[in-house]
Length: 386
Image (cartoon, rainbow, N blue to C red):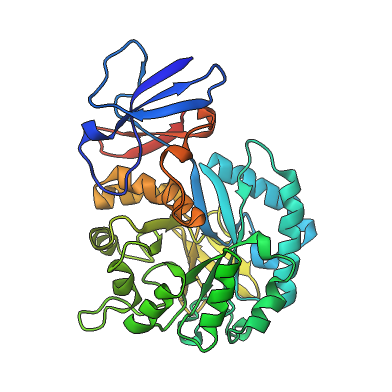
C-alpha cells in the first residue's frame, strides 16, 4: 500500500487551498483505491505532493487530423500513419480524441468511419484512444460555414441523417449542427435518442433560437465565438443564451488567435464552469510551419495558425495541453485551465453523469498527469504522475 498526500484535484472555480487537498491510497501496482479530501494540510512520512494537481490525460472533442492526415480523407492505407499520430498524441498528454469529420460527401464519411473501426483494433496501453466521432456538419448554415466546403453542406432531415450514420450509430459521440435551420429539431431529437451529444455551431442562431435549441437537447457550443453570432450588448446571441444557464458546455479553441486572450478571460467570468478546451487541430498538427494540402485546397501554417488562401482561419496545430498552459496564465487560474482540458470534456461525453472520484478510482497512477506551478516564472507544466 502507498499513500500520497496534499494533492489538488482540478476545479472549475477557485477554492481555498486547504479545501482542495486530497490524499490517495494506492495498491502495490499503483491502482488508486481511494481519494479523499483532507481537512487541512497533512504532515506525514507518506509521499507529499505539496499541492501539485493530479489529473487524467486530456480528451480532445474536436480534432480533425494530424501528421499529414485528415479524418475526412481517411482510407485504409493511412492506418499506419494514423497509429503514429495516436502514439504522438499520447506523448502529448492526450488520452482520447473524438476524430472530427468536417462537412464532406457521404462516401468520404462512411469510408472514414470504416477506417476508424478497423484502427480501433490496434488499441494499446500507451496509445491515444479513438473515441466516438464528432460530426461537424453537414447540417450547417452556409453563411457561417467558415473553412467548410459549402458544396458539402446540406439541409437537415431525418432521412439525410439516417443515410449518413446507418451502421455507425454507436460510433458517433457528438454532432455539430445549426439548430435554427428547418428540420434541425427533428434531427436533434433523433440524435438524443441515440445518446449522441448535440452541439450548436456554424450557425446563425440568435438568442431565442439558441434557447429553443438548448431546451430541445443541444448541450454544447462548438468553438465558441467562431462561426456564429457574437456577444453584443443589444443581442447577446447563443453565447449569452448559454451563459444564462450552467448546463451548456462551451467548446473553446485556446490558442489566443481564434479568440483573444482577454475575451477568454471574460468568458471565464461569464461562464466559469462551462468551458471545455478543444484543439481544432488539422492535418498539419505535428508538422511545423509550411504549406499543406487540405482536401482540394492549400493551407498555410505560420506560428501554428492555419489559414486558407482567402485568409479564413482553418483550425490550429497547437497541442491541447500547450493551450491549457497558456490559458492558465491568461485567466490566472491553473486549476480551472487543467479542468477545461481534462475533466470538462469527460463531463461532456458522460453528459454530466460522472463524479470527480470516478475519474480516479481504479486508475493506475502511471496513466495520470502531475501538474506544477513554478513559483518563480509562474508557468504551469505537466509530467507523468509516476
